[in-house]
Amino acid sequence: MRTDAARPHMPVYLDFNATTPVDPQVVAAMTPFWTDHFYNPSAAYPEALTVQSALDQARAAVAALLGADREPHSIVFTSGGTESNNWVLRGMWMGRRSRRHRLVLSAVEHPAVVETATVLASLGAEIVTIPVDAQGVIRLDALDAALDEQTALVSIMLANNEIGTIQPVAEVARRAHAVGSWVHTDAAQAVGKIPVDVAQLGVDFLTVAGHKFYAPKGIGALYIRPGVTLPPMMTGGGQQEGWRSGTEPVPLIVGLGKAAQLARAWIQQDGPRHQAALRQALEIQLREAYPDITVFGTGADRLPNTLALAHPAWTGSALLAACPAIRAGTGSACHHPDDTGSPTLRALGVAPALAGGLVRLSLGRETTAEDLAVVSTALTQAFSTCSPLSEHKECER
Image (cartoon, rainbow, N blue to C red; front, side):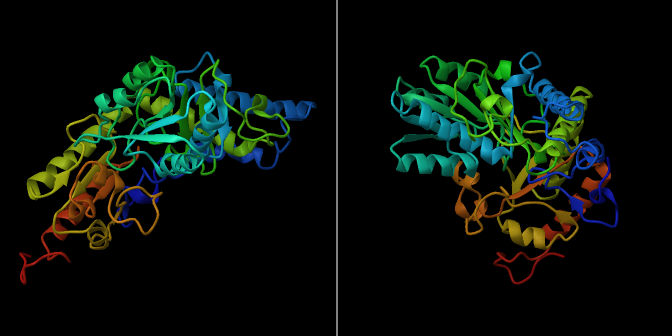
Protein backbone atom coordinates (compact mmCIF):
# COMPACT_ATOMS: atom_id res chain seq x y z
CA MET A 1 0.00 0.00 0.00
CA ARG A 2 1.27 3.46 -0.90
CA THR A 3 -0.28 6.69 0.26
CA ASP A 4 0.11 10.30 -0.81
CA ALA A 5 2.70 10.57 1.93
CA ALA A 6 5.09 8.58 -0.26
CA ARG A 7 4.82 10.73 -3.38
CA PRO A 8 7.78 13.10 -3.92
CA HIS A 9 5.58 16.18 -4.44
CA MET A 10 3.62 15.62 -1.24
CA PRO A 11 4.68 16.19 2.39
CA VAL A 12 6.09 13.09 4.03
CA TYR A 13 3.62 11.77 6.59
CA LEU A 14 5.37 10.63 9.77
CA ASP A 15 2.51 10.77 12.26
CA PHE A 16 1.42 7.14 12.13
CA ASN A 17 1.28 6.99 15.94
CA ALA A 18 -1.54 9.53 15.72
CA THR A 19 -3.46 7.63 13.05
CA THR A 20 -2.98 5.54 9.93
CA PRO A 21 -4.78 5.60 6.59
CA VAL A 22 -7.24 2.79 6.01
CA ASP A 23 -5.54 0.14 3.92
CA PRO A 24 -7.16 -0.31 0.48
CA GLN A 25 -7.56 -4.03 1.18
CA VAL A 26 -9.44 -3.11 4.34
CA VAL A 27 -11.71 -0.79 2.38
CA ALA A 28 -12.37 -3.55 -0.15
CA ALA A 29 -13.26 -6.03 2.60
CA MET A 30 -15.65 -3.56 4.22
CA THR A 31 -17.44 -2.34 1.09
CA PRO A 32 -20.02 -5.15 0.60
CA PHE A 33 -21.19 -4.79 4.20
CA TRP A 34 -22.40 -1.23 3.71
CA THR A 35 -24.94 -2.27 1.09
CA ASP A 36 -25.23 -5.88 -0.12
CA HIS A 37 -24.66 -7.50 3.29
CA PHE A 38 -26.45 -4.93 5.42
CA TYR A 39 -28.39 -7.45 7.51
CA ASN A 40 -28.57 -7.45 11.28
CA PRO A 41 -26.28 -10.28 12.47
CA SER A 42 -28.70 -11.12 15.29
CA ALA A 43 -31.43 -12.15 12.85
CA ALA A 44 -32.03 -15.83 12.07
CA TYR A 45 -32.46 -15.93 8.29
CA PRO A 46 -29.63 -17.08 5.98
CA GLU A 47 -28.47 -13.64 4.85
CA ALA A 48 -28.06 -12.51 8.45
CA LEU A 49 -26.22 -15.69 9.34
CA THR A 50 -23.73 -14.86 6.59
CA VAL A 51 -23.12 -11.50 8.27
CA GLN A 52 -22.69 -13.19 11.64
CA SER A 53 -20.14 -15.50 10.07
CA ALA A 54 -18.18 -12.45 8.88
CA LEU A 55 -18.14 -11.12 12.44
CA ASP A 56 -16.88 -14.46 13.72
CA GLN A 57 -14.09 -14.44 11.15
CA ALA A 58 -13.08 -10.92 12.12
CA ARG A 59 -13.05 -11.85 15.80
CA ALA A 60 -10.84 -14.85 15.03
CA ALA A 61 -8.44 -12.65 13.05
CA VAL A 62 -8.06 -10.19 15.92
CA ALA A 63 -7.60 -13.06 18.36
CA ALA A 64 -4.88 -14.53 16.15
CA LEU A 65 -3.04 -11.19 16.06
CA LEU A 66 -3.01 -11.21 19.87
CA GLY A 67 -1.98 -14.83 20.27
CA ALA A 68 -5.44 -15.78 21.50
CA ASP A 69 -6.27 -18.16 18.64
CA ARG A 70 -7.83 -20.73 20.97
CA GLU A 71 -10.08 -18.25 22.72
CA PRO A 72 -11.61 -15.96 20.06
CA HIS A 73 -14.59 -15.16 22.28
CA SER A 74 -12.19 -13.33 24.58
CA ILE A 75 -12.30 -10.51 22.00
CA VAL A 76 -15.05 -7.92 22.45
CA PHE A 77 -15.42 -5.22 19.82
CA THR A 78 -15.60 -1.63 21.08
CA SER A 79 -15.53 1.82 19.52
CA GLY A 80 -11.79 2.11 20.09
CA GLY A 81 -9.01 2.47 22.62
CA THR A 82 -10.66 5.13 24.75
CA GLU A 83 -13.78 3.04 25.31
CA SER A 84 -11.77 -0.09 26.06
CA ASN A 85 -9.64 1.71 28.63
CA ASN A 86 -12.67 3.32 30.26
CA TRP A 87 -14.50 0.01 30.41
CA VAL A 88 -11.69 -1.77 32.24
CA LEU A 89 -11.08 0.96 34.80
CA ARG A 90 -14.74 1.74 35.47
CA GLY A 91 -15.63 -1.95 35.46
CA MET A 92 -12.91 -2.65 37.98
CA TRP A 93 -14.35 0.01 40.28
CA MET A 94 -17.89 -1.31 39.92
CA GLY A 95 -16.92 -4.92 40.44
CA ARG A 96 -14.16 -4.83 43.06
CA ARG A 97 -14.52 -1.67 45.16
CA SER A 98 -16.16 -3.48 48.05
CA ARG A 99 -13.04 -5.62 48.48
CA ARG A 100 -10.22 -3.70 46.81
CA HIS A 101 -10.04 0.02 46.13
CA ARG A 102 -6.57 0.76 44.75
CA LEU A 103 -5.75 1.45 41.10
CA VAL A 104 -2.09 1.52 40.08
CA LEU A 105 -0.94 3.15 36.85
CA SER A 106 2.27 4.54 35.43
CA ALA A 107 3.22 8.20 35.14
CA VAL A 108 3.20 7.97 31.34
CA GLU A 109 -0.27 6.56 30.64
CA HIS A 110 -2.61 7.81 27.91
CA PRO A 111 -5.23 10.40 28.96
CA ALA A 112 -7.96 7.78 28.51
CA VAL A 113 -6.44 5.99 31.51
CA VAL A 114 -5.26 9.01 33.51
CA GLU A 115 -8.48 11.00 33.29
CA THR A 116 -10.67 7.98 33.98
CA ALA A 117 -8.56 7.28 37.07
CA THR A 118 -9.12 10.89 38.16
CA VAL A 119 -12.89 10.38 37.93
CA LEU A 120 -12.63 7.21 39.98
CA ALA A 121 -10.55 9.03 42.59
CA SER A 122 -13.44 11.45 43.06
CA LEU A 123 -15.61 8.41 43.81
CA GLY A 124 -13.27 7.09 46.47
CA ALA A 125 -10.68 5.06 44.59
CA GLU A 126 -7.08 5.24 45.75
CA ILE A 127 -4.84 6.06 42.77
CA VAL A 128 -1.13 5.26 42.92
CA THR A 129 1.06 6.56 40.12
CA ILE A 130 4.29 4.66 39.49
CA PRO A 131 7.25 6.83 38.40
CA VAL A 132 9.45 6.01 35.43
CA ASP A 133 13.18 6.18 34.89
CA ALA A 134 15.02 8.43 32.45
CA GLN A 135 14.12 6.10 29.58
CA GLY A 136 10.41 6.09 30.38
CA VAL A 137 10.39 2.58 31.89
CA ILE A 138 8.40 2.08 35.09
CA ARG A 139 10.28 1.52 38.31
CA LEU A 140 9.48 -1.98 39.47
CA ASP A 141 10.56 -1.22 43.03
CA ALA A 142 7.87 1.47 43.20
CA LEU A 143 5.37 -0.97 41.74
CA ASP A 144 6.19 -3.51 44.44
CA ALA A 145 5.56 -0.89 47.11
CA ALA A 146 2.06 -0.26 45.71
CA LEU A 147 1.03 -3.90 45.55
CA ASP A 148 -0.93 -5.54 48.33
CA GLU A 149 -4.35 -7.05 49.02
CA GLN A 150 -5.99 -3.63 48.44
CA THR A 151 -4.79 -3.41 44.84
CA ALA A 152 -7.67 -4.04 42.45
CA LEU A 153 -6.05 -3.23 39.10
CA VAL A 154 -2.67 -2.38 37.65
CA SER A 155 -2.87 -0.57 34.31
CA ILE A 156 0.44 -0.16 32.46
CA MET A 157 0.61 0.66 28.76
CA LEU A 158 2.57 -1.71 26.57
CA ALA A 159 4.22 0.96 24.41
CA ASN A 160 4.34 4.69 25.01
CA ASN A 161 2.61 6.80 22.39
CA GLU A 162 5.07 9.70 22.60
CA ILE A 163 8.56 8.20 22.79
CA GLY A 164 7.87 4.54 21.98
CA THR A 165 9.28 2.96 25.15
CA ILE A 166 8.07 -0.62 25.68
CA GLN A 167 7.17 -1.52 29.24
CA PRO A 168 7.96 -4.84 31.02
CA VAL A 169 4.28 -5.79 31.15
CA ALA A 170 4.89 -9.52 31.63
CA GLU A 171 6.91 -8.84 34.76
CA VAL A 172 4.30 -6.36 35.96
CA ALA A 173 1.62 -9.01 35.52
CA ARG A 174 3.62 -11.61 37.42
CA ARG A 175 4.07 -9.31 40.40
CA ALA A 176 0.51 -7.97 40.37
CA HIS A 177 -1.09 -11.39 40.13
CA ALA A 178 0.90 -12.49 43.17
CA VAL A 179 -1.29 -10.19 45.29
CA GLY A 180 -4.53 -11.00 43.46
CA SER A 181 -4.68 -7.85 41.34
CA TRP A 182 -6.05 -7.71 37.82
CA VAL A 183 -3.71 -6.41 35.11
CA HIS A 184 -4.62 -4.26 32.12
CA THR A 185 -2.37 -3.03 29.35
CA ASP A 186 -3.25 -0.31 26.89
CA ALA A 187 -1.65 -1.81 23.79
CA ALA A 188 -3.10 0.69 21.32
CA GLN A 189 0.34 1.76 20.12
CA ALA A 190 1.84 -1.73 20.10
CA VAL A 191 -0.72 -3.91 18.32
CA GLY A 192 0.13 -4.17 14.64
CA LYS A 193 3.65 -2.78 15.14
CA ILE A 194 5.33 -5.48 17.21
CA PRO A 195 4.40 -9.06 18.15
CA VAL A 196 1.80 -9.02 20.93
CA ASP A 197 0.87 -12.25 22.72
CA VAL A 198 -1.59 -12.10 25.59
CA ALA A 199 -0.38 -15.41 26.99
CA GLN A 200 3.23 -14.25 27.14
CA LEU A 201 2.20 -10.93 28.64
CA GLY A 202 -0.03 -12.66 31.20
CA VAL A 203 -2.56 -9.81 31.25
CA ASP A 204 -6.25 -9.97 32.11
CA PHE A 205 -7.25 -7.14 29.75
CA LEU A 206 -5.65 -5.67 26.64
CA THR A 207 -6.79 -2.62 24.66
CA VAL A 208 -6.77 -2.50 20.85
CA ALA A 209 -7.34 0.61 18.69
CA GLY A 210 -7.99 -0.14 15.02
CA HIS A 211 -6.97 3.18 13.50
CA LYS A 212 -3.43 2.69 14.77
CA PHE A 213 -2.89 -0.20 12.33
CA TYR A 214 -4.73 0.69 9.12
CA ALA A 215 -8.30 -0.08 10.21
CA PRO A 216 -11.03 2.58 10.30
CA LYS A 217 -11.48 5.04 13.12
CA GLY A 218 -14.30 4.19 15.49
CA ILE A 219 -13.50 0.50 15.95
CA GLY A 220 -11.33 -1.30 18.46
CA ALA A 221 -11.41 -4.24 20.80
CA LEU A 222 -10.83 -5.36 24.34
CA TYR A 223 -9.26 -8.71 25.16
CA ILE A 224 -10.79 -10.16 28.34
CA ARG A 225 -9.05 -13.21 29.75
CA PRO A 226 -11.42 -16.17 30.04
CA GLY A 227 -12.60 -16.57 33.61
CA VAL A 228 -12.36 -12.87 34.45
CA THR A 229 -15.65 -11.18 35.32
CA LEU A 230 -16.11 -7.58 34.21
CA PRO A 231 -19.43 -5.72 34.39
CA PRO A 232 -20.88 -5.14 30.89
CA MET A 233 -20.01 -1.82 29.29
CA MET A 234 -23.40 -1.53 27.59
CA THR A 235 -26.64 -3.29 28.53
CA GLY A 236 -29.57 -3.96 26.27
CA GLY A 237 -29.94 -6.64 23.63
CA GLY A 238 -27.15 -8.89 24.87
CA GLN A 239 -24.96 -8.77 21.77
CA GLN A 240 -21.37 -10.02 22.00
CA GLU A 241 -22.40 -12.57 24.62
CA GLY A 242 -23.71 -9.80 26.86
CA TRP A 243 -20.37 -8.01 27.17
CA ARG A 244 -21.39 -5.03 25.04
CA SER A 245 -24.98 -4.71 23.88
CA GLY A 246 -25.92 -2.88 20.71
CA THR A 247 -26.15 -3.93 17.07
CA GLU A 248 -22.62 -4.46 15.88
CA PRO A 249 -21.08 -2.03 13.32
CA VAL A 250 -20.44 -4.84 10.88
CA PRO A 251 -18.41 -2.97 8.20
CA LEU A 252 -16.04 -1.55 10.81
CA ILE A 253 -15.59 -4.92 12.50
CA VAL A 254 -14.90 -6.61 9.17
CA GLY A 255 -12.35 -3.87 8.47
CA LEU A 256 -10.67 -4.46 11.82
CA GLY A 257 -10.47 -8.17 11.09
CA LYS A 258 -8.85 -7.58 7.70
CA ALA A 259 -6.41 -5.08 9.20
CA ALA A 260 -5.48 -7.68 11.83
CA GLN A 261 -4.75 -10.23 9.10
CA LEU A 262 -2.54 -7.74 7.25
CA ALA A 263 -0.72 -6.72 10.42
CA ARG A 264 -0.02 -10.31 11.37
CA ALA A 265 1.41 -11.02 7.92
CA TRP A 266 3.59 -7.89 8.03
CA ILE A 267 5.01 -8.86 11.42
CA GLN A 268 5.66 -12.43 10.30
CA GLN A 269 7.47 -11.08 7.22
CA ASP A 270 9.96 -9.22 9.43
CA GLY A 271 8.37 -5.82 8.89
CA PRO A 272 9.29 -4.46 12.36
CA ARG A 273 12.99 -5.19 11.90
CA HIS A 274 13.07 -3.44 8.52
CA GLN A 275 11.20 -0.47 9.98
CA ALA A 276 13.59 -0.22 12.93
CA ALA A 277 16.55 -0.15 10.54
CA LEU A 278 15.04 2.80 8.67
CA ARG A 279 14.38 4.67 11.90
CA GLN A 280 17.87 3.98 13.16
CA ALA A 281 19.45 5.26 9.93
CA LEU A 282 17.52 8.52 10.23
CA GLU A 283 18.48 8.86 13.87
CA ILE A 284 22.17 8.41 13.05
CA GLN A 285 22.01 11.00 10.26
CA LEU A 286 20.41 13.60 12.51
CA ARG A 287 22.76 12.94 15.42
CA GLU A 288 25.81 13.24 13.18
CA ALA A 289 24.57 16.49 11.67
CA TYR A 290 23.47 18.02 14.97
CA PRO A 291 24.91 16.43 18.12
CA ASP A 292 22.89 18.89 20.24
CA ILE A 293 19.64 17.05 19.63
CA THR A 294 18.31 14.71 22.31
CA VAL A 295 16.72 11.42 21.30
CA PHE A 296 14.46 9.93 23.97
CA GLY A 297 14.14 6.32 25.06
CA THR A 298 17.35 5.09 23.42
CA GLY A 299 18.36 3.10 26.50
CA ALA A 300 15.23 0.94 26.45
CA ASP A 301 13.31 -1.20 24.01
CA ARG A 302 11.32 1.07 21.69
CA LEU A 303 8.70 0.67 19.04
CA PRO A 304 10.49 0.14 15.73
CA ASN A 305 8.71 3.07 14.11
CA THR A 306 9.11 5.79 16.72
CA LEU A 307 11.82 8.46 16.88
CA ALA A 308 11.21 11.15 19.51
CA LEU A 309 13.70 14.00 19.58
CA ALA A 310 14.16 17.57 20.73
CA HIS A 311 16.58 20.39 19.92
CA PRO A 312 17.28 22.84 22.77
CA ALA A 313 16.87 25.88 20.49
CA TRP A 314 13.50 24.93 19.03
CA THR A 315 9.99 24.30 20.23
CA GLY A 316 8.46 21.30 18.55
CA SER A 317 5.72 23.32 16.90
CA ALA A 318 8.17 25.93 15.57
CA LEU A 319 10.45 23.25 14.16
CA LEU A 320 7.64 21.53 12.30
CA ALA A 321 6.38 24.87 11.02
CA ALA A 322 9.85 25.41 9.58
CA CYS A 323 9.66 22.02 7.83
CA PRO A 324 6.65 22.11 5.51
CA ALA A 325 7.88 18.92 3.84
CA ILE A 326 7.05 16.93 7.00
CA ARG A 327 3.81 15.98 8.70
CA ALA A 328 4.64 14.86 12.23
CA GLY A 329 3.56 15.41 15.82
CA THR A 330 4.80 17.11 18.94
CA GLY A 331 3.65 14.33 21.25
CA SER A 332 0.35 12.63 21.83
CA ALA A 333 -2.46 13.63 19.48
CA CYS A 334 -4.92 13.06 22.34
CA HIS A 335 -3.86 15.63 24.92
CA HIS A 336 -5.72 18.83 25.59
CA PRO A 337 -4.68 21.78 23.39
CA ASP A 338 -3.67 23.85 26.42
CA ASP A 339 -1.08 21.29 27.56
CA THR A 340 2.43 22.74 27.87
CA GLY A 341 5.09 20.36 26.67
CA SER A 342 5.09 16.59 26.56
CA PRO A 343 3.50 14.89 29.60
CA THR A 344 5.74 11.88 29.03
CA LEU A 345 8.89 13.97 29.01
CA ARG A 346 7.78 15.80 32.14
CA ALA A 347 7.38 12.40 33.83
CA LEU A 348 10.94 11.56 32.73
CA GLY A 349 12.19 14.68 34.52
CA VAL A 350 13.15 16.46 31.31
CA ALA A 351 13.50 20.23 31.71
CA PRO A 352 10.35 22.09 30.60
CA ALA A 353 12.12 23.98 27.82
CA LEU A 354 13.41 20.77 26.28
CA ALA A 355 10.11 18.95 26.86
CA GLY A 356 8.42 21.66 24.84
CA GLY A 357 10.73 20.84 21.95
CA LEU A 358 9.51 17.29 21.44
CA VAL A 359 9.02 16.20 17.84
CA ARG A 360 7.68 12.69 17.31
CA LEU A 361 8.48 11.08 13.98
CA SER A 362 6.51 7.85 13.63
CA LEU A 363 6.98 5.71 10.52
CA GLY A 364 4.40 3.63 8.69
CA ARG A 365 4.75 0.28 6.96
CA GLU A 366 5.24 1.95 3.58
CA THR A 367 7.71 4.61 4.71
CA THR A 368 10.82 4.40 2.53
CA ALA A 369 14.45 5.45 2.74
CA GLU A 370 13.62 8.06 0.09
CA ASP A 371 10.91 9.50 2.33
CA LEU A 372 13.34 9.73 5.23
CA ALA A 373 15.96 11.41 3.05
CA VAL A 374 13.44 14.21 2.53
CA VAL A 375 12.86 14.38 6.28
CA SER A 376 16.57 14.42 7.09
CA THR A 377 17.21 17.24 4.62
CA ALA A 378 14.29 19.30 5.92
CA LEU A 379 15.30 18.97 9.56
CA THR A 380 19.01 19.65 9.00
CA GLN A 381 18.18 22.75 6.98
CA ALA A 382 15.91 23.97 9.76
CA PHE A 383 18.52 23.33 12.43
CA SER A 384 20.98 25.44 10.38
CA THR A 385 18.78 28.53 10.58
CA CYS A 386 17.93 30.87 13.41
CA SER A 387 15.34 29.34 15.69
CA PRO A 388 12.69 31.38 17.51
CA LEU A 389 14.55 30.60 20.74
CA SER A 390 17.99 31.57 19.46
CA GLU A 391 19.85 34.20 21.49
CA HIS A 392 22.19 35.00 18.61
CA LYS A 393 21.59 37.82 16.18
CA GLU A 394 23.23 35.90 13.41
CA CYS A 395 23.09 32.20 12.63
CA GLU A 396 24.97 30.04 10.21
CA ARG A 397 23.12 29.57 6.94
